[in-house]
Image 1: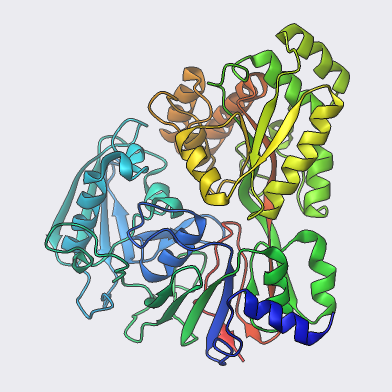
Image 2 (image 1 turned 180 degrees about the vertical axis):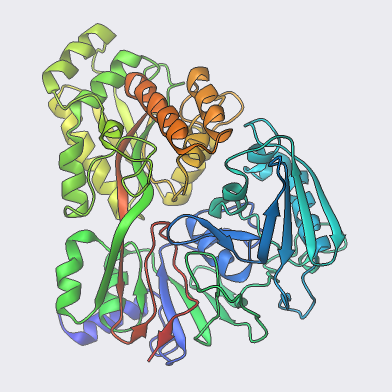
Length: 514
């Protein structure tokens, strides 16, 4: 394949050769457009870009501890129910306005008023144990959160990447109270320059950003932009993205295929890897008449060689893990790998007990995320070997995501964004399936244990609770965890300072392009 063809392929992908090749523009590939700028209608790409523009009060560090972001410091009362935050000295919005405690409260009240539209409301309204009772603003740089009772997850939920509980300028909202389309006035080190929908999102350095003294780590600390622009280039096709990387049109290719690492290195690219926190599972809709049969679900679990899938898909960078506790977590030990063993004969016996008569089971998947598609192909073949009639239903990613949000599937090949505390992950999959359509597991016993895990800060006590939850999950099989996706990024040779971290989120600050 000659270079002319490579470049023409990149052009066809909408890269506009030369447009993003300036030394001060960092080009990062994303595989789909963002869903908006308000942070309510979200997905992983949306989260990634908006967290460059906006800042949460606190953020996760690389080691998964909580560090300062928009708040430079905080204190906790002796009874564990009052958190007092001090806003970073010199913090301003991109329009020049100072960030004040009133802005923090305005954002909080707006999120809460959104009700179920902000899916994280359930994390703070008491329905999952943590209840914020008041937000007070004693002076412009001080904001006080009062919670009903001590909770191990309060700071972690404030830092929760998927919640987008960041602080935006009230001027993003019009006189009608609605978010102005495509408005994005934040306080981060990058501001929105241009959004060409379906093509790219360009952010530019915010010159008046005043950083913290703490060294950058994760989403915390000094987030100073060192390039003039960060351009997130929308390239849906994996092969086209690789072509653009090899041609020098893309500087950072996240979610790089593990099997391609040696090829990338041979081309002079940097390849960075670390253990990840993003679970890749097969979802099961337990409300489906067929899939509601626990014997059938157990049969499916026995029919799949999970270890083989993990090894094949990650080139040995990650091992099988069916639990909500990743290998990268301090809570992890081998007990979290206990699961129905791979045994097609046991699967066949359970199918007979379940009264399975060869009914079709549809596995929804997509080709936007190559791993999801390949996992579904492998699972389909393994199920067929045990006598289970599985069919792939290949959808556009947006359609599949809508089905996930509505609970409309029998099985789905899926991927969860990184949750940085096991309780956060269990809080996503466990719930009342009548009211929470994205909940995968409706066990009240498991839900009570999840709530218990949030109400203590004792490490060993929480670990024991997580083990109880996993034991229940191994019996009920409401979801089939495959592995935690290793974080792999291929990066151009001219890039300095780029790093991967377990949360698997691209960070353009602190990065230079030579």
